[in-house]
Length: 254
Image (cartoon, rainbow, N blue to C red; front, top):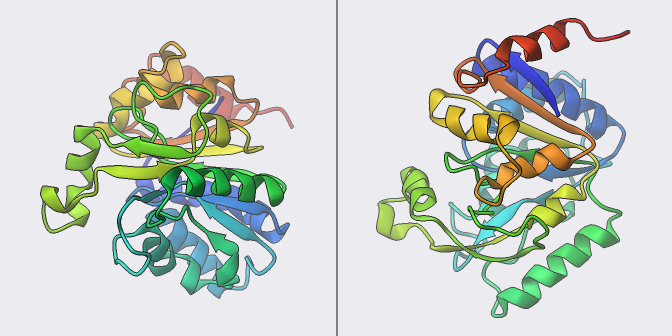
C-alpha cells in the first residue's frame, strides 16, 4: 500500500488528479465514486480538461454503487450525481458511463449483470474509492465478505445518518443499495482511495495499520498489489507510522 500524506484536501485532490489524468489520457476504464470526498478531484480534472490537458473521450466508466429504489432521474441517484458533478462537464461519451440499475425489478439479476458488464469491458484499470467513518468502501458495510461480488446491501444506520445531509431528512435516505463487492473492487488493477478530515482518521488507521478484517472492509486494500491511499493531515492523524510514510514518499527511488 502506497500512503501519500498531503497538507490539505486541495493538495489531496491535485495528487489524485495527477494519477487519474495518466489513465484517462491512455483511454483506460475508470471506476468512479460519489460522495463528498472525490468532488474536489473531479473539479480539478474538469479544470484540466478545460485547459486541454486531459480527455475522457476514449475512456469508459463504471460507478461503485447505486441506491435501490431511486429512479435514475432522482437528483440523489448516483447516476444523476456523477453527471452533475463530473462527467457532463468533460468529454465522456455518456452511454459509456455505467452504474448499477438501482430501480430494477430484480436486484439480484441487476447485480449479476453489472459484474458481467465490468468483465466484458476488460475490467477496471483504476478504481477511485472513498472510505466511510465505519470503514466501508462502496456500500460494503462491516461484516461484508472480503470476496463479495456486486450485490444488494443493507445500509448501516451510521451510513444512513452520514448520507442524510444529501436528502431532506434521514427518513428520505434509502436503506438499500447495489454495490460492487469487495471481491469485485479488488479485481481493479489499481485502487486509489482518498480520505480527508479527522472524522475519517480512525477508519484510516484501521484500514492501513489494523488487521485484515470484515469489520473494516477497507482493510482489503492491504491485500491489493497496487493500492494508493492519499490522505490529508487530519485523516492521517491517528497513523502510528505517519512519519515513515512521509519519509518513503519523499525518498522514492528514481
